[in-house]
Image (cartoon, rainbow, N blue to C red; front, side):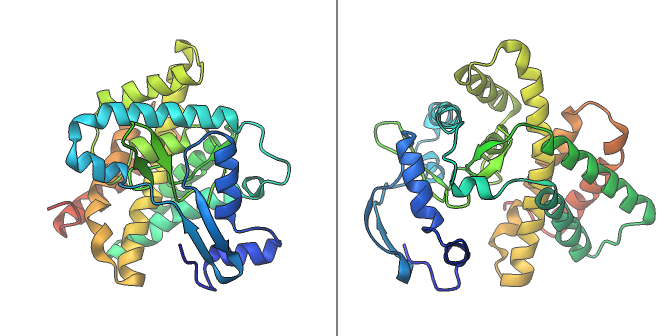
Length: 300
């Protein structure tokens, strides 16, 4: 692994006067009995790390053996539950404690969708639509920041999990871990833009997570509500990122996930109880789905 001089991780390390986040978090997770790559050598001042290659990603394994999907995802949600419990008390000086899904970040992420997933595609919101969007953003952010916060991987999805030969799951790309709600990584995993799950599959995995966390059955509706609210916020951001990558980096490879990602938002909005704060957001999302579909922004 090589991190260039201007890599955000090295800049953060210099600014805070602490180890590279990857190194700190690798040790934290290993001590919490999460399977992570071993470290064979490091020259952090050069941004150079020698780490273990743990093989294929979960996404790659599913392409070869799709029949393993339920077992692998069951393991992924149970491992996540275990990690959350093991990391419930973070070390006082942990880098995870220095950053969080706070009001500012969550709001910026939703606005990122408005800028890139709406306006960059040639749509100007009317005054009424802008009010609708701002009202929905405030509700989503207020709701998410009200949840208890703990360790969050931040991108716990099929391209960042490694499927091992013994059926276990290893974690990578954990250097951006921060504080956030318990369901955030579940959304990353089960609303993965690169995978396609039906509702029954998602419900089964949520039940398995709840059981692994020791939650009573009566708490499942609250977990599902939290999951759906975070799905709307997270997947709006993701859809905006896909257009952002194409417009600013010339990387159009993510555009195919624009429509499927917004369909996840639409599905979550359909499951959430009717609320005045979210009224009108679905119409904006569905219009962007149709625009994306007309431009081929979905898998071939």
